[in-house]
Length: 273
Ligand code: G1P
Image 1 (tube, rainbow, N blue to C red):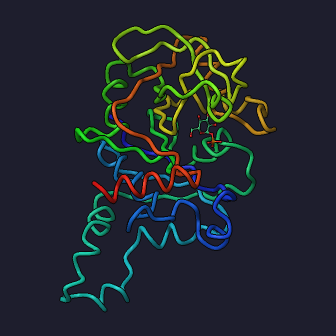
Image 2 (cartoon, helix red, strand yellow; image 1 turned 180 degrees about the vertical axis):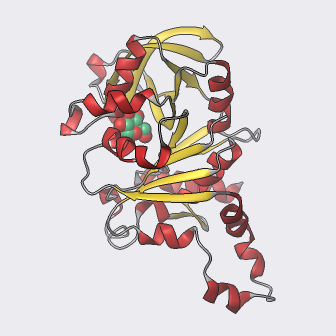
Image 3 (cartoon, rainbow, N blue to C red; image 1 turned 90 degrees about the horizontal axis):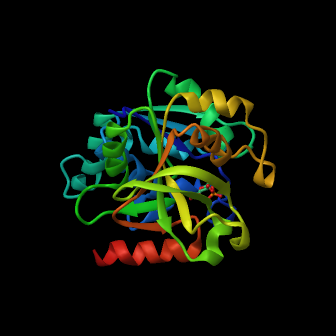
């Protein structure tokens, strides 16, 4: 069972300026719920109890969101508005939130390594990038589906993938490998944000990972790659070469809420639902 989920949340969210000048991008709401809360709910659905959040300067709103607001509770207690808080209250009761600050932005791989102090090296753990918002109408979330795969292969990492148009491979980590069972691929190659002409396939990694603790050893020696940043994709490639990485074609929908277009699409999708 995966018990801990890491949420890298230190990024600046420059694509959403000026909205993200004083508000963390993870707190931007799709309808009435911040992106990060969708991620936390997904982690809970997969059995996680510890939410380990890698934050940065200017991100205090995240900590306040996942805590009791006595003043607010006092104001609305016994009124018709009380139900607005019931969902977040139940989340706060069901899990523990831990935080560490990433002082410098040196890439996703670096953020995961910073998270080691919250995760430890005893067990496999999940990683959710909250700006990839996922939904599954059949009730099984993407991370839940991935945890099921990991149960069958407990010594392997699992990354979620989906097919993207070839011209978009430069926005994602891209994998290639052999299908070993329906929707599960043993990864043989992976490249961070390749040009379409160099992409090994059009299977893009989306922001859901289950990682084995060995990833921390690898990250410690991973040199900066694409964009001068430490890439989780490069660290995973080392494990993939040892046959330790699976890619899973998830069932469901994913919205790139790191872009304005994806955010609008997600908002209208969830509104209609
Ligand atoms: C990160 C990863 C990339 C992955 C993507 C999924 O990139 O580096 O491999 O495909 O998340 O959203 P970012 O979107 O942070 O640039």
